[in-house]
Amino acid sequence: MLTGAFKFRFLVLNQTLLVDAFHNFPGLSKPHSTVEYAIKKLLGLGERKSGDVLDGVGEQIRNLRKRSGRLKETLENCGWDVLESCAVVSMGAKPSAYLNKIVKLKKSPKDGGSTENDATYEVKLDDINIREAIFKVTGFCINSSSWTGIRGYCRFAIALEESKFERALDCIIKFKESVPESL
Image 1: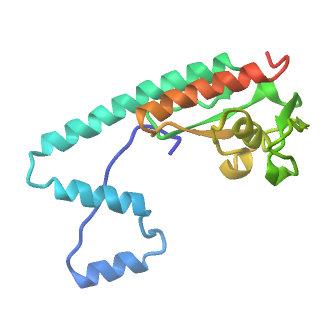
Image 2: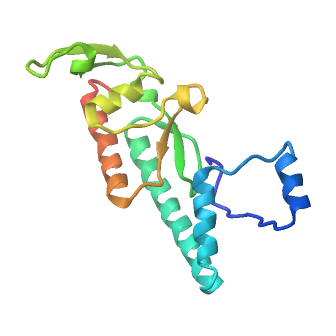
């Protein structure tokens, strides 16, 4: 999903022989439940003009492209190296300015801290534990490089409702401000 604009393509089959062939073809897999949901919604709009659906898809692509630009700018201003992408649902970025920086995090009761005191611990940031650090400081959750499978790069979601996207941008800035000598 990091490679470019959305393209919607699907095939509806009603002949058993073809359905069986596609199910048994090793290069195809069952679509993700979100894809199935989108297909059902698109098919449900079948009585509307096809232009309405295409206009909606085009508007979503433009919205994601705009968000992609805003997220890229925010991340770069906060010391991240961003992988180029265009109108996608997520973006990859390397936390270059934060690597090997020491950040103090508050212990939660789960970590052995208590709610009565401000027990903290220090963490030397890397591309994996930065996920936990960002979450503890801001409440914002990203995927670390252990999730992305791209060594050194984290994943940021773009396909969020507008208020959550705006909050995510604010959290990226808040985290930058919480890391001493980060930039």
